[in-house]
Each structure stands twice: as C-alpha cells, then as structure tokens.
Image 1 (cartoon, rainbow, N blue to C red):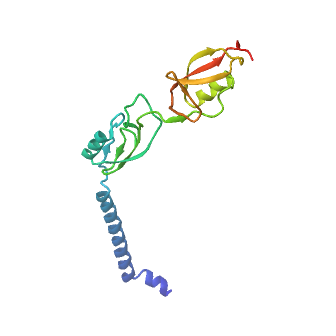
Image 2 (spheres, helix red, strand yellow; image 1 turned 180 degrees about the vertical axis):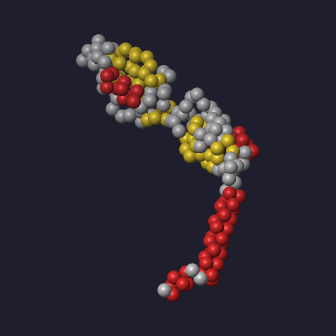
Length: 186
C-alpha cells in the first residue's frame, strides 16, 4: 500500500517529469550535435575520373575536398592512356561527404610480359596454337619448312627473330610458327 501511495505522491511525479524532460533534452541535443558533426545533407557529387592521369586527378579531388587511394593496377587496356584511371569507387555521380576517399584502379604502362613455356618445339601445331593463345599471344604467319615431321613446330619467331622457351614477350605479341611440311627425309 505504501508503494502505491509513493508512486502517486507529488515528489515522485515531479521527479519523473523532470527525468523525462532531461532525457528528451539529451536525445534532442545529441541528434543536433550529430547533424552538425557529420555535415548532414552536405554532399559532394563524385566526378568522373576515367582516362585522367594521377596529377590531374589529384588537382580535381583537392578542389572538391576529396582524397584518393590507388587500389591496384589492372590488366592493360589499350583504350585508356597509360597510368590513367580505369575504374573508381564510388562511381561517378554518387553523393559523398567531404574528405571521402575515392578508390582508383589504374591502367598499367603496357601489357605484362609473359614467359614462353617449355616443350613447344616438336609438338604439333594443334597442340601449340591453343597454348600460345591461352597465354594471350596472337598467332602470326605459318612458315613451312622442309622437315620429316608434318605439322610439327620447328621454331617460334617474333618480328623475324627466333624465340626460345623461357624468353619473355609482352602479352598480345604476334608469334610466327615455323612448321614442318613433311617433305624431308631421314
């Protein structure tokens, strides 16, 4: 009985109302503080940085109060200048806050060098061509040479020079195949 009497007393009700007012004021103050501290509704539109080199990107981002971080270089894309931006996160046109990092993927200076694998000489053309194509090379001229093994690869050439297993060529290089024509004798 004393408990119910205490709950409905003037002192308790006054303290309860005062506590509710303080909690509401603290929540309202915290929300206003967050709105100011996080620059609520103040955004910057991310520019399209593709095909720009890093020095130009840095100037643009500095003007807009944004930062950059280079993630990595991707596979070479001949449609983009060397060391230019291939991709960015967030994408162009997105809204971001001030001082946000823009993550960039750059175009390398050229194709990577690929090693010529062992064991291509004296294999058939049907075996060698798919291997070279899978490595990213292009097949150029087929040069026939007298040899007993018809269709066997006798030599690989790039720009007229013989290449050996273990040599490195840029990806997408054209390799000419010297193939036996089957007319040779033992």
